[in-house]
Image (cartoon, rainbow, N blue to C red; front, side, top):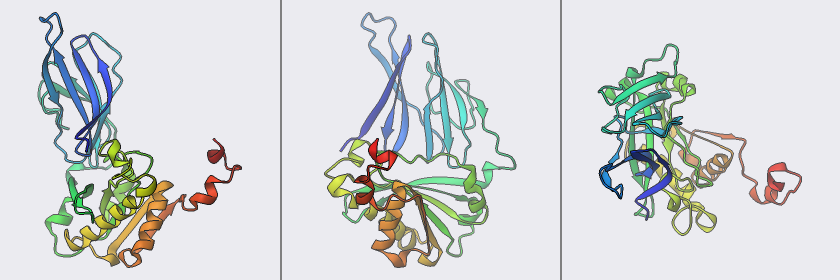
Length: 287
């Protein structure tokens, strides 16, 4: 399968910046050119890395062509949306604290009464039932929940897995009421999305057309892993949620294993697919 997927290439006078995906996460690579070489050969190729395992990063508003500084948009499951300034001449690891001369936090979204030091996030993989596919999984929770782990915890699993769209591990303040009540929040990056590149969506091993069942199987496999292998919850404490095509995911997963879930939330679920697609009076169908 694909090891690395490239989305965009942005040129500058002395550098080029590439965005894409690798290992299920959005990535940024900086290419430095040798200005002393008439052919502008590549002098350095560096991937930016970040402290937090589960994060989202993309290019910010970079309007200057002749510059050595790069603006990034960064967030994670515990870090609010931030604008980072990176020195492309020295593109080393970029931390969320902005420490070091080659990186600087220009601005960060203010979230009242929020202390990120109380929370942590992680990224792991779960083996699917086919024995070959590793499903990326992101988790966020209050630190004291796991540090004092003496019992099972209420766990909320979300997913989407359609149209090749990636569900990123970005910050969302609406999760805080759940986290503050001891809920472990989980994102299952199931097949059908684009987290692992185009192959994660397309046939024969993705989740399009005849292999759409992989989306539902992956979601159920992640839930079972949380109970049996990670041992952080039980079916009595497990809830799931998805919206639109994610609602289809929830409906199929609950039907596949009804005893696995205590609560299921389907937001504007796209579950009656055949009747919807043949109804020309629906604007999205006709469009």
